[in-house]
Amino acid sequence: MSINYLGLVKRAGEITWKHKFLWILAVLAIFTEGVGSGSYVSLPSSPAPTTAPEGTPNQEPSNYERNLSVEAKYSQLKQEVLASGLVQAAEDTASNNAAMALALLILTLAGSLLLIILLYLSYSARAGLIVAVEKIEKDHPPTFREAFHLGRHFGWRLFALYLLVGIAFAALVGILAVPIIVLVILAGGNIGAIVLAILLGFGALLIIVLIGLYLSFLMRVVEREIVLANQRFVKAFQAAHHLLWRYPGQYLIIWLIALGINLAGALALFLPAFLVGIVLFGLGLLVYFGTSVVGTIIFAIPAGLVFLALMIFIRTLIITFESTYWTLGYRALLGETK
Image (tube, rainbow, N blue to C red):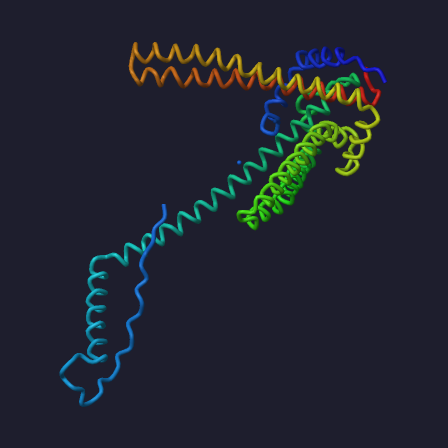
C-alpha cells in the first residue's frame, strides 16, 4: 500500500489553519494531552483508695503511706493542670483538628470531583477533534458545538481507556519490581544474589520500555478505533495490532513522523518561551529599577498573562495539527484517503 506521507502532513496543516473551531477543542484537550496538628496528654483516672491496715509500725513509710503520698501529689498536679487550662486547650486543639480534617476531606472530594469533570470534558474534546476531522474529510464539516456533542459520547470511554491502561502498566511495574526488591533484601552481603538482582532489574526495565513503546505505537489508533469505529476496548486493541502487523512499514513511518511533529512542537514551545521570557525579564528589570516594587508587580501580572496565552496558543496549534495528522494517517492505513 502506497501512502503520500508528505500529503498527510500538508493536509493536516490545511485543516488546522482553515477550521479554526478545532482550536477551541484543542484548548480543552490540553488537560489530557501529553495530581497543623496538635496533641494532648490524657491523664489516667485516679486509683481507688485502700483502707489502712491497723497497727502499722511508724518507723519507715509503708506501701500504704507511699500510695497516699503519690495520690496527694497526683491530685495536686491534676488541680494545677486543670487550673492552668491545659486540658481545655488540648480539647480545643482536638476539636480544631477534627474540623480541619473534615474541611480537608470535603476539599479533597470536591477537588477530585472537579478533576474528574475536567478530564471528562478534555477527553470529550479530544474525541471531538477526531470526529471533526473525519467529517471534514467526508465533506461534512461540523461546527464546534456538533463536534463537541459527538465527542461527549466517547469522553468516558477514552477516560476509562487511559485509566485502565495506566493501572495495568503500574501493576506490571509492581509485579516485576517486587521479586527484585525481595531478592535484594534477602541477599545481605551475597555478591552473587546482588548481581542477579541487578541483571533482573535490567531485564525488567527492558520489558517495561518495550511494552511502553508498543503501547505508544497502538494508543493513537486505538483511540480512533473507539471513536470512529465504535469499538470496545479489546476489539480496538486487536484492530490496532492488526493494522500494525499488516502494514508495519507504513505504520512505523506514520509513527515516526508523528514523533517528529511532537519534537518540533516541543521546540516550538521552548524557543518562544525562552525568547519571550528573556524580553519580559529584561523589561521587568527596567520597570523595577525605574519605578518600584508595586510598579514591577503591575507590569508582571499582564506580562505573565500574555506569556501564558502565547504558550497556550502554540500548544493549541500543535495539538490540533498532531491529532489531525493521526486521524488522516489512520484513514490512510484503512485505505480511506481523500
